Image (cartoon, rainbow, N blue to C red; front, side, top):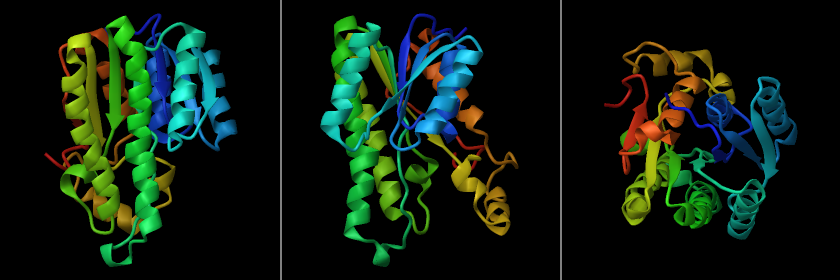
Length: 248
């Protein structure tokens, strides 16, 4: 089940954390994976080498999704070089935390440029290819914060909530072409970012998670592999909550 043999996937922000886990999960199911990165060349190459060492197929691609023209050109180039594009995982995103009264305009703009405009640019480029094939999978990685909110993350929550509206709208636009569009809202997941948090803060977060543990990147990647598969062909415009019960 959930095999992706012969398919091509692009994962934005694929060099670390959830993105890396998604790259590895899709490759394990047989997909050729393009690992997008901006500055983490060494990390991206490490992901590629690991996938290849396990018998999979992968390559790295450097482009900043906040640069619309660069994103569209890079995705178009991948589709032409590999002959197809079946899966886009729009995972890349940034978080600049701050209380509302201290928010800087430039930080808000930067987050929207990456998290929303960048993801839209990638989806736009991918759907152009998928429309011709009359099949495709687009998966947006949002956040539990989009649904439940959080102190000090108003702007970040706004960008991630926007992706939920984007998911539902694009799903309706492209359903007739058999392109499915879904979103994942991860909860508190163990990544480089959360690993650096003080233990006291982690303990506080744990109290809000009914399953009693911090999520693993693989928990999110498993959902990504499912949504990318043929078994999820009748599922579109939906949001999968991978949060351990933190928000239900």
